[in-house]
Image 1 (cartoon, protein in one colour):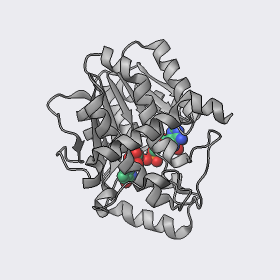
Image 2 (cartoon, protein in one colour):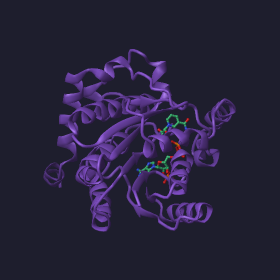
Image 3 (cartoon, protein in one colour):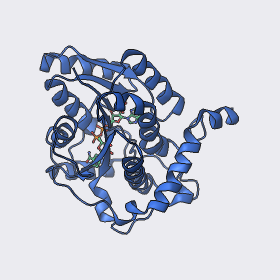
Image 4 (cartoon, protein in one colour):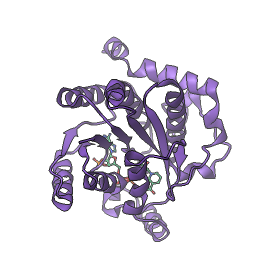
Length: 287
Ligand SMILES: NC(=O)c1ccc[n+]([C@@H]2O[C@H](COP(=O)([O-])OP(=O)(O)OC[C@H]3O[C@@H](n4cnc5c(N)ncnc54)[C@H](OP(=O)(O)O)[C@@H]3O)[C@@H](O)[C@H]2O)c1
């Protein structure tokens, strides 16, 4: 039985991908932060697919200590990992200023970039042990609206200026850049990304938003595809062979990332920052 981890799999696209991959007979571990939702998701996936090998582990992915703990727990249970899907993301338009975690990191950057990077590094050996393990990182079609976007390396934590949407797109660009870097340097592991299009969201999850934004989401959802349809490309990359490119859209076609994502010098600088910010040493120094 092959093993798969999906983060943020208690709702939306992550949930549907977990269901589809479980239906293909994989042992699936959902990594979620809320126990009730995680347990409900795991049991309904098992019930629907008949696959009893669906479980969950808890972690708040904005905490690097949390990422380390969940990785250690997973590795105490499994020697090999075939697929890691870094799906969870923090995108809350109601946030007005950067939220700084106990570890001193901006929460969106921590969840959307540092956590996928750190868990990938922690799982590297288990991925390699499974043969050519796969990492799938999740990007956004919204980046196409900013074809000339560049990584603002001096404002990764939003302290110079902050808007949740622009920080999110900076995060998604950074994740693509880190993925491209790892794709080149992490031997024995296949690293790819999915460009998620406009996908229907569960509006009940957006209670905090002002009425006007809720209305905008309701209009947006009229033009969106279902999480189930979007999850199909996660599933294809996770379970099938023959997709050897880097970034895929919802139709399973390979697409180019933003031009600046391929800047190797910038990728290297980003990785140096990620390495520094996700090490235990730094955390201890802060404490
Ligand atoms: N929907 C779209 O139109 C769209 C467009 C472009 C890209 N995307 C990307 O597609 C992916 C899935 O999005 P979705 O639409 O399916 O969103 P979603 O339903 O809101 O799912 C996001 C998941 O991430 C989890 N999460 C957020 N912060 C977390 C944290 N600190 N620790 C642990 N889990 C955390 C959430 O957990 P909780 O349930 O606990 O909140 C939830 O399970 C994301 O990477 C998103 O950026 C979506």
